[in-house]
Image (tube, rainbow, N blue to C red; front, side, top):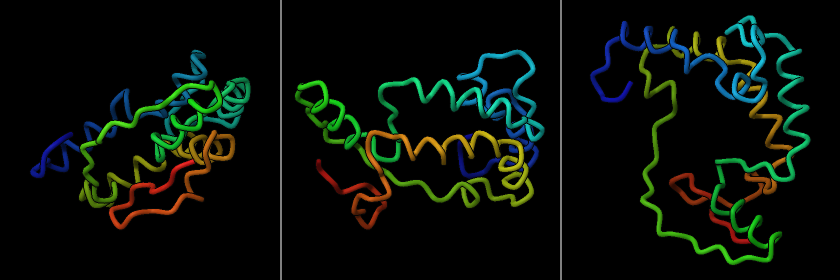
Length: 142
């Protein structure tokens, strides 16, 4: 939910929705019964990892521009960065404002979170190795 005055019940309804149930795993595996919220098993995670290993390029959205630049170089193309409209967001726990809802979302999506953390290891750019600006944006060129 968007906005600063979102009630806890609205957050709870959102947290129990279809789109907050291991979205990446559900999209990558497309296997009936694989994603089971907090009960999603390692087999589902393994299927998603197996598919991602077959990709030529994996991009970490944390450093999208740097990744697009690296991909462009790989393809011998020119990447023209746009002047982004950058705005930082407070951490998710702070944005949600209800620790019980945040903790529920983390438990519910733990396999999705695990997949994202693993995918950083095969990303075209190691975002964590890039210097950061004070507002958290990556400040690197390849």
